[in-house]
Image 1 (spheres, rainbow, N blue to C red):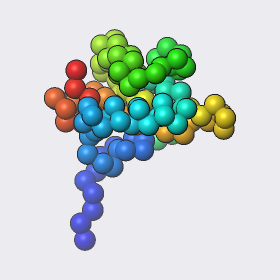
Image 2: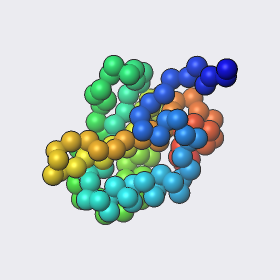
Image 3: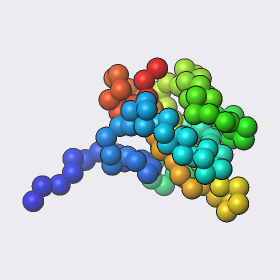
Length: 118
């Protein structure tokens, strides 16, 4: 029997290949289309027991395009390049987090594992 290689997994899309630029933009667009508020969070060494990551600024309540969110991801990455960075979507009706996915893994070369090239 063959098993998956031992590797730390994070969040919703971590079992899939790294997202491309276009796929990340589409996920963010879906978030905005649903009326969810995107937020960027980062953590140096996330563990499955760690539910709370550090928030990069406040949630982007006024974001109207994926590019606005991606610009904030870029700023977070330039400041905290050695951290994992994820985009989180909050539902203001249910008042909870409804989606999250990693857009940057530290030490990833090129697009392999980072999900977003700058």
